[in-house]
Image (cartoon, rainbow over all chains, first blue to last red; front, side, top):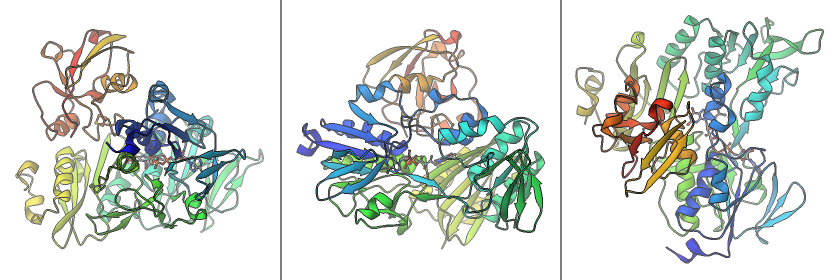
Length: 413
Length: 106
Ligand SMILES: Cc1cc2nc3c(=O)[nH]c(=O)nc-3n(C[C@H](O)[C@H](O)[C@H](O)COP(=O)(O)OP(=O)(O)OC[C@H]3O[C@@H](n4cnc5c(N)ncnc54)[C@H](O)[C@@H]3O)c2cc1C
Ligand code: FES
């Protein structure tokens, strides 16, 4: 353990109180840091998990107490001071202080930025009408509840994972759902035509109407001033009691950028989650970090990345350098289907299907120059679990073996 | 309510009253029992909430689902009694349950 790890007179401040922040605070204690930890977050809630927001929290199966990242007593037990509903507006790197929205300042010896991301807003007419919603926070979901009733019409703008998860929960809850997707297929930004096609069919079978190559032009209100129609670029008017805009997110990099740190597609960090300032670290959705596995810089939007980078950053803050280089993974729940994804498929040249999509249990493997780089597995844990390992090993496996279900995944080495 | 005994790999014992309806994983995490990562928060997507159910409790903790079974199959140090603790729902039936935690998750 280094001096930094124990130094009881130092103050480490974590900005942002999401998934990465909660883990970072816990990991600092595990690394042996005995000084003061202050967690400053703009939201009113203690760190919580966002995945349930479009899944079990939206459906009502989980209340807020079940989505907290750590139980509320954790922060006292671990001596972590929390300052919630508090936005940090500025970092002064020379004075090593933060300015809070209230005008107060807060000094730090070391600083971790876990500011995450925010939804991209659509600058279209009517996007601020009562009845239109974005989905990133607990407050967003709570604000949507009153309109989320059987028989109501929901129009979802954007066929990404969050849009499709909400479509699944809403349809199952008895709402009439239409998804408008600007691209030629849903999930285009994140996966292959094969997987997009599968999910389009799944949703259609359950009664969701998906309209691709359809851009939203405006929202119109009814005589009560509330949302009544979503109007497409072609002029079609789709009745809407509520609308969800899910058109992607932007990393919260402004604090870092204004303090002179490099931050284009995320706050730039190295494999140890260090910025160019030796006292400032960053982790989670907000970072632009190197991936040795893919030999390029990446920004990820996933729980696994937030947790693991938080561990790496906490270690580095305590003088313990452990490079972050893991196979990314992610999941999505829609109806009774569990999609598990390992790796990044960007740039693949070959896709190999294993199993039959008609059975709702299959996997798609993505290869680049014969090397396995990613897998999308639907209700197919062996393909996912083994795939994740093989991707990390940069395995080369013949497509005809991968697709042969008479060879078990364990033998796929 | 069920009293659940969690035994860390080191042998350290935690006896905890867990509310019905929560999972065995949540009982541990909410009470700061170390040894479960539970990265996915109970979505049966990560296999980092692996535990071992003591023999006399295996019948009462219910059937292992398909997804759980195949995830466990790839977990480190799988044994008789291995379960993903997020998939065991707590009820009065489980009062007295004893689970052991592995040395490492995944
Ligand atoms: C609906 C939904 C479903 C998802 N589903 C999945 C899933 O199934 N699987 C998966 O792996 N991932 C999923 N994700 C993504 C995952 O939740 C994120 O990757 C993760 O939350 C990132 O954690 P983070 O701590 O980096 O950032 P965030 O969770 O975004 O937290 C950052 C926090 O910092 C605060 N903040 C920002 N700027 C400031 C400031 N200047 N001062 C103070 N506070 C500030 C923000 O308000 C926010 O609370 C989902 C996300 C959403 C929204
Ligand atoms: S918590 Fe992820 S599988 Fe149990």
